[in-house]
Image (cartoon, rainbow, N blue to C red):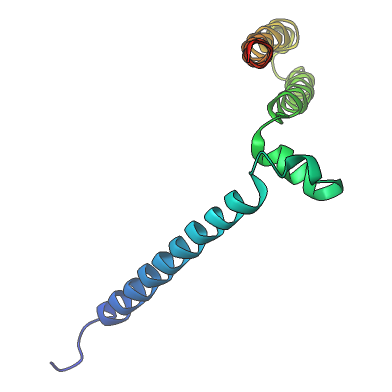
Length: 133
């Protein structure tokens, strides 16, 4: 009544504008998804795609997976970080540094090998499924 809202009116109006923007973006995303699905994911048109459109088609079809490359890069980054952390720890606690350097890298390798084996099983099962069709 007297304008002593302490900023609540601005928060409410911003919130309603934000929710209407979110709703509009949701509608645009749905429309774009339908258009892309109709234009790019048609199996009959897939043979006519070349170049960048072909790569986009394969990306949207999940014919090639990015997970293997991401896991390899993540392993290399994590192993380097763990090794550098172990070297930095040598000045304060040499036993902890040796444990981090040896056992930390071994445990890290086992974890990433488990992830890669799980991924390879998925890829092999999908290849078997394609051959059976």
